[in-house]
Amino acid sequence: MNDLQKRSWAEIRLPHIRHNYEAIRATLPEGCRFMGIVKADAYGHGALPVARLLQDAGADYLGVSCLDEALELRQGGIHMPILILGHTPYEYTGELISHDITQTVSALAKAREYAAAAEALGKRLKVHIKLDTGMSRLGFLCAGSYFDTGVENVLRSCLLPALEPEGIYTHFAVADESDADSQAYTRAQFDLFCRVTEAVRQRGGVSFPLRHCANSGAVIHQPDMALDMVRPGLLLYGYGDQDRPLGLRPGMRLVTTVSTIKFYEPGTCISYGRRFTTDRRTRMGVLAIGYADGLPRLCSNQCSFAVPGGFAPQRGNICMDMCMADLSELPQVDVGSEVELFGDRCDIYKLAQAAQTIPYELLCSVSKRVPRVYIEA
Image 1 (tube, one colour):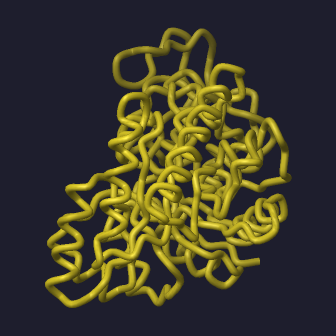
Image 2 (image 1 turned 30 degrees about the vertical axis):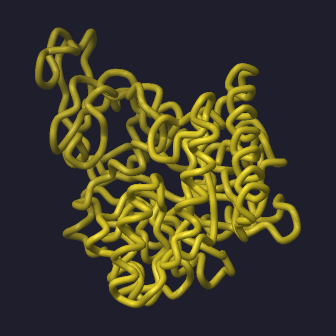
């Protein structure tokens, strides 16, 4: 990054991500595979750099959301298995097959469309079956009165000759919540998943080499649910292990700079909407970051940032391209000083709480105009 770009930037510490991968992998049962989730540009960290790291480190699978994300990895030289977790229109079955991309199948109708397209090409498509066990999103319905029809529809899908059913999985809704009710809900989801999988085996003789349902929350709270493969997302990037510390390290550090410092007398209104008024003579810094860069406007007047010598309270409504912070008690902070929004000194969870959101959203919201600076050492 040259000096002209030194406005705001995101430091991506690749050694931290590799450390997190190794720390998580060390907790897994012998033989359990690792799918690194790199959808949404690897949660803002950069899909290609993270995928290359995971490929080099020995991960077994990558998870993405859509075909475009999978093709980006293939075109970038990633040759390890890739699973599309979301929907792909059946018209792109040829693309899936030619690039050796595994597709999620979430309904019998979709299975038939993929199979017909693959058969027309004289090929087979590798798929993973998705069960809806309580997330109420994608997946074969199988809870309650849908159990028998769900099992039957999974069997019909798996027996289509142009499909290669390599795996079966589900997604937990509250595995990252540690309260008893949430953990009981996760346990019920897991039990249903196991019952459906076993029924498919008993009724149709179909077994899956890869059964996976453990996302980041389950890796921490329910390690017995690892089965054949786990799917860490947030854990991989250094967050989500508060209840069972693994020594993870944050993969991203979001940094900006002080562009201007001004003094205001008591009674001065700051920023749009006049939501903050100075109550003393105030040394106010203008920071070169705003909501267009990924700093949520909801954080206005609710957070502090790390600066040399301490923490500076953010003041006034956050603007599109900048925001203000009170530097009155921090004389060592000057124009050009670095300001950390989250990373080593500023807890991303506190910023997420101020924004009434979750760390996932903050990481994914760091915009494209914020340069990523990759730290290799």
